[in-house]
Image (tube, rainbow, N blue to C red; front, top):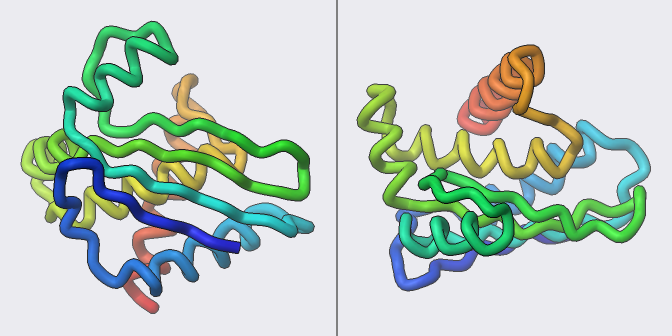
Length: 143
């Protein structure tokens, strides 16, 4: 069980990576029973790098803060690559009047939640995702 964090030509400013990795693993177990393997790879990158991924793999020509690829091969594992635009996170933190650290963790949790089966396409799914993100933020920062 592991979570790893990579910086692709940009600094994320993420602190306490070892603590966060352990917390993410435990949270996956909280949402999904019977998971024997967790491997989360977070790749922090620029707006342009994520836009290129968005165009190439999703056929979307828009900037985004996160793209999550589920690479799980069975129901007993959660394996994924989560790409996060550090520039978009910083801009969104300013736009929503929250700290960069808070917004960065919200997006990190958002990717993990997608891999645990949470959606965000429909209004009800978005509301459920936001509630789960808020619960993760509260639980992580209270610990």
